[in-house]
Amino acid sequence: MAVVSMIAQRIGYAVALLIAVLILNFVMINLAPGDVVDTIAADSGGADAELMAEIRAEYGLDQPVIVQLGRYIAKVAQFDLGYSYFYNRPVVDLILERLPATLLLVFSAQFFALIVGVLLGVFAAKRPNGLVSHVVTLFALFGYAAPVFWTGILLLIAFSLKIPLFPVAGMRDVTVEGGFLPQALSVLHHLVLPMFTLGTIFIALYSRLCRASMLEVLGSDYVRTARAKGLSPREVTMKHALKNALPPVITLAGLQFSAVISGAVLVETVFSWPGLGQLALTSILARDAPTILGILFFSALVVIVGNLLTDLALRFIDPRVKAGG
Amino acid sequence: MSDQPITRARSPFSEAFEMFRRNHAAMAGLVVLVAIVATAILGPIIYPGDPFSMVWAPFTPPGQDGYLLGTDYLGRDLLSLLVHGAKVSLTVGLAAAFVTVTIGITVGALAGFYRGIVEEALMRLTEFFQVLPTLLFSMVIVALFGASLPMITFAIGVVSWPAVARITRAEFLRIRELEYVTAARAGGVRNVGLIFRVILPNALPPIVVQAALMVGSAILFEAGLSFLGLTDPNVASWGQIIGSNREYILDASYTVTVPGVAIFITVLAISLVGDGLNDALNPKLRQR
Image (cartoon, rainbow over all chains, first blue to last red; front, side, top):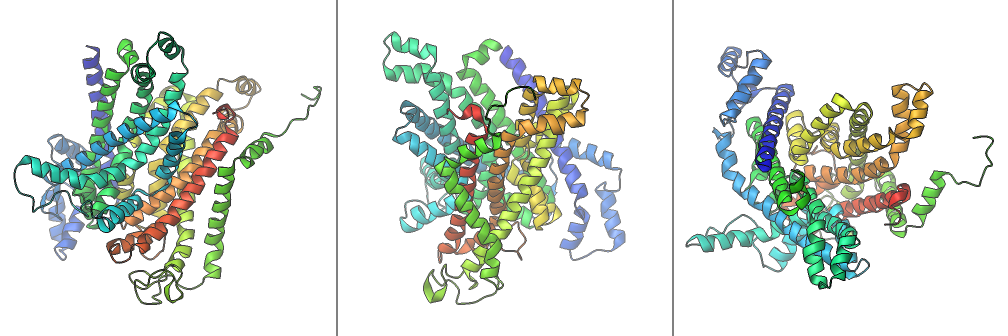
């Protein structure tokens, strides 16, 4: 029951946040110089004032601002994010076409970073001044300071051009034939470098926090008790310590979703990964406002869903959250 | 205070400076940073000329024909671009961090000081800004309002402040309950005075550390935006060099890797200095 009411509460809050995103979108598009009609007029090589006024009336742009805002929100509620004059397609179609690629990249990078980060953190915590600890520190510095697109380009040069292990660009090999399995393998093959590039920043973050968290837990009374009753070091680490050291790391990972999406925009550009980031870039260069704002809306949606999933994951892992109801 | 015996106390600043000086990594970072800033300021004087002028054959490898770092796809001197770009990258980084910190401190201080509905509203606002992917948000701002350097600076600052706001609020929440604040309030200090003269100076250490790191993040941010082409094409910056040469990594990878090294070293130096400041200014963490 507690979980259901929590989810209901969170969904209500999420809807409020999304409406806020729409209002922000609306404010920005109204503040920006020029409107949709100017764009259409410019694209079609000019139009007279009368025709432009006609189009404005057609789009409701002559209505009061608050009415326009209401219409905009009502339209989005019906899953209509407007029409892209650049692609000549509804924005929702454009986004849904690209969304899977971005979701695959974002979630695989998060999982990869979490697993590697936690493993590094656990090993580093075993010997606070050992080799792995130093590696974690160095990695953390590198992960913070290296521009993600630069890391991507370096990996691309190293593992696609000099040593041709992985493909240079794209998401799948069009020459691959056959059923689901070969196709999936081709996608995975293309995914390795982008995932690794995007994951690096976050491995640094998670491993550092996991190390600190593990060190704290390993010094606690219940871990000493577990050791005293004769459990093997492995059991103590995996069952008692890690379980309690994990929640802060998961919480941090949940907070990073928006940063991961930001990074994905750059990584997608480096590896020509056909996701939302690529779409955002081309539509920005084409000044295609409906598409840009639609992407901003959808990325906020992904972040909110990511946060919700994190909360659920925490409930499964952290007994205290469950007990607290 | 005056009738107590005066013991030999060192000012917190000299103590912190002593801590910082003994931190080798932080000192190394500081030295590198000073060198980079000096390059940014003096570079254009020592190495004059328009970095955008085409001086030699395109894709001349580093070291050949007297061009230390080679030339890019238009035959422009990469070293000249790098030196002139340093000023832009650092300036945008500093200015954006300033915007970030100003907004962050204002929001955090008001939320932490006034509590109640003010805090509720401001923290909701902060959460809202955290839901929007920062890079996408700033791309949208730059796309809609133009890719001038002031707009880029503003776009970076306006999307990055939530972290500073959270830290400031946490510090204000902690400090506002301390006795010297109550004493100051009893002594008739008004709210504005309490915020700026009593609480803020004591809340500054973690904010300063965050601000230092923000400069690094902002440099990375500017580089990311210009890598995507969202920059003023008539002004050289490190990210802009990488972005404009992006298509040619097959022909001349150094045109992309070398400016990346400049960004990497600069941000690394800033983060080492930031870590050093953190150890020096936050005494509770010193035993870490």
